[in-house]
Length: 395
Ligand code: PLP
Image (tube, rainbow, N blue to C red; front, top):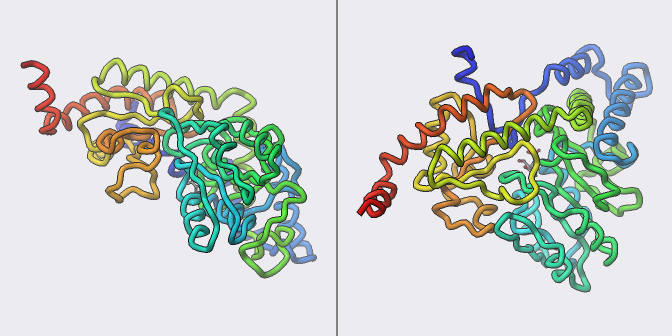
């Protein structure tokens, strides 16, 4: 491995992913040569319109829906806001979970202030929601269930198919945030039984600020943005054609990766990393390790260490990882996801997320396996709590 690559091991792909070269190449003509407004009827407009149509088909293939059911958005946060705010009104009850992304949790909290009721279903020690708990949460005014497909911090997959069945049986709309599931596990909106599903481009190697929502035909969504008739009136505003083209290309690549098994490589590397860490470092564990998870994510606790200190120490070794969700880094609060799973705040603060992407190699994981034990030991050696635990163990 060359010296350069030692300083470039990016393992924070759940925060964002780099554009893939094919995605950039697909987008490039739409900045200058093919710059038309997709609503214009002359050639340049038609060119842009056709590009949107193709991208819509690629998104639809990845999600297993019709292309007429795809609405382009400006990313995961916007999609989650649209899916939730667009489906309820004051007096309605929403069921969500304690471990959702802030895009869902804070939208629900804002709605609570406007007169909606919200139930946040608890998770078990592995971060899983019990479908029966969702059923028990249902009230006569329950209008929407919003439960994520995969958790951004732990990669834990929720039993969305069972929840979808409950929603259909009880006639409640069902939204799932699939931002961290898209491209990592196969998705079929019919199998999930959801009415709305959101994805984000920059988690699947497309540009930041791009995204899409599946909106099942007949679902009565109110738009958030008013203006022109773009996106069949669901999301007004001139479309981001280059970004959408990039999203479409990234969906094609994701679809191929799920079919040809290349996504499984990430699972092998992740599993190898975890088994090596468990062997070579004491007082560690995998958060959500016994639950079904997306293949690319590993969230581990390393007792006696501050996650943020470890992020900084690993950065010095050229490894990018994350302590808690990117959106809350800098905040001193322990991760709400890990706390909801029952971790004490010390252990939650001692947790780190490594997340792989398509650009990673086996060498990246070998490098991490090689450097992590020393970095951890160095930090533990200067931790008074660790020293005390050692001396009490030896006395
Ligand atoms: N939902 C989940 C599960 C996420 O992980 C993220 C981003 O981290 C979002 C929503 C927000 O997506 P975006 O960054 O595209 O706004």
